[in-house]
Image 1 (cartoon, rainbow, N blue to C red):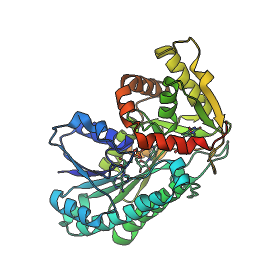
Image 2 (image 1 turned 45 degrees about the horizontal axis):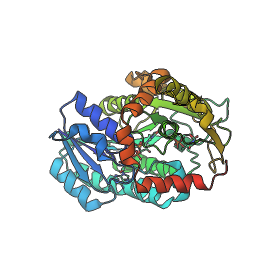
Image 3 (image 1 turned 135 degrees about the vertical axis):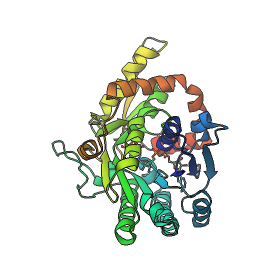
Length: 356
Ligand code: NAD
Ligand code: TYD
């Protein structure tokens, strides 16, 4: 048996592939386009491991998909591939439509044809698991209850709108064609291999480099944080026991304002790698112009996944954030290798127009 993972060289996909092969011998076909966010160094531990077959390619490439499915006959597809950064979606939404909408559509079409060609017991056992986000539900007011699976879709950024469209396509392929799909909507992840354009790794990397720590607006926007390995364990559990056609919200009940996150990162660095001049890292905090359309609050109600599938996160926020900061301290070579020209250009584009 084999599974096919898309986007397995990115942050969550790479953590998933590493954890999967640490726990089972079932091979993984890893299809990834290697955009700026894809990094084979994330998978360097698997070099020479025959259970990992990496294929560079696009989920929108129908011919490639058809060939891979016929050749490897996976029993499940896990779709992580996406453009994933809200700020990039504001500067350039087109790639988000190409990958998240058109790409998911092409993938579903290829998978539908493959699935129909399987014998009936293999058809029944087959799963298409779509990895999505809580951002499709929009923004919550301070005292609103957390997002349940039946919360209406109200995406506010080109990123969340494109993910919402992909979720709808996945749902439709189940209802119309009977494709055995599962969808997970997870809150903000953090942990090893997180690309340093996102809040937590950006703050760690900038703090260590003596740079400004850019907090958007008043820093009181709330996100619900989950350690990436807990997201991976939830996906494994949903793949194993989720009911076909169902949606599962994934989260760890860790709502925090952005400013608190930045202060936590600063205090951990003060403890683990104090500044040479004796100053505190939080003196580097700078308030910058807010993100347009910035969602105020996300919060996930993960009780369905806990109740029906018995999943629980292993990390608290305190344990997970400490491990994460330590990982970045121990892996500064990984950081400097991805700080390529393209990454520097992005930092220039995103922050140059923001007034302090
Ligand atoms: P990421 O940006 O780190 O990685 C995305 C990966 O997909 C990269 O390796 C990239 O090369 C690959 N990719 C992009 N376009 C592709 C294409 N057309 N064909 C094949 N591969 C392509 O993203 P991530 O943070 O690891 O997120 C993975 C998935 O989880 C996404 O679907 C995202 O929407 C979802 N998600 C992310 C979070 C989060 O906090 N990061 C939370 C919930 C859900
Ligand atoms: P991000 O990591 O981009 O994830 P998302 O937008 O998908 O939630 O951002 C997390 C929060 O941190 C979000 O409210 C925006 C904020 N933020 C900053 O304040 N400064 C920054 O430099 C970045 C990248 C994000």
